Length: 352
Image (cartoon, rainbow, N blue to C red; front, top):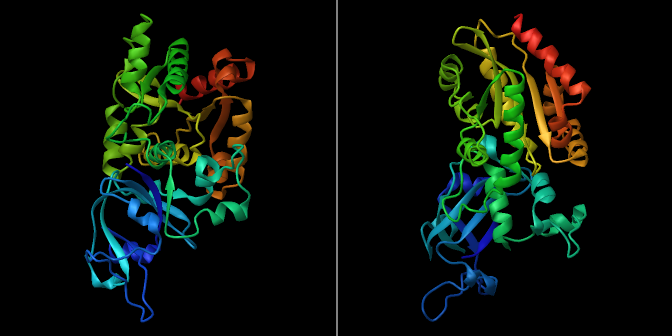
């Protein structure tokens, strides 16, 4: 099996979202050259390496400059439509649901993929990076494709070879640490749907008490999120701390995402979903929980701050909410500043 990036204009996707077409070798009259077996001769010989079962990222070039989905080649090459009569065509299907909010920008690709790094592991300069996507299809590594799976959706795990798609040990450890802190502050701790079992397995292996961990979102929050369509995003937030405002009625105190791989786009999407959900509850529309990103180290904290400052919508959200970014070491130690922030938030929410 091979992995690819296919470069296709968005207009081609709108015409046939179940097909991709690659250029054929043409004769002097502009007609596709056919081989003795009747197949069309590809413009580049390496097109012959493309096989049914291969996976690829569907990249739309300027002005879009994003990956709109991850696909599998299910049939071909054949002629499925005469709209693209000079192309070699393949039937395709998405391996993850196509969601506009999950589109991956070109700039994220350049930051994250080995495909855009030189032999020394350094990120390519702008012109060199752009040149890498010149053409119709480029082979990428399995590691890069797995990274694309994680970037495209943290809500779903790729169906094949899931072990290794997401390196869970460090991430799970980070979530576990924030879960422990919630108990220290006498808060109920909800662990997101994707990570919950793995976090609890790790806790169980250490013989830790998990009896107080929330296994689902409070009904009022879950019901609103289902009604307005944000349930998938908020149910996958890594860790949410709740305070019991009244008997059996929990309100969110802190929304915590642990991001060690740089997918700030996914984090901000889930934060925004929570904000929208809370604003749809009349009683608690003025709740202002803490939004916290926990990074691997201080250099990553700086990187995340820079990315947020460079993105207008993220920066606006940052300014309008109680938003903090900490390294896991600082958060684990609970220094005086963090303790003061958490304690003040507990008091404010408790007096709401």
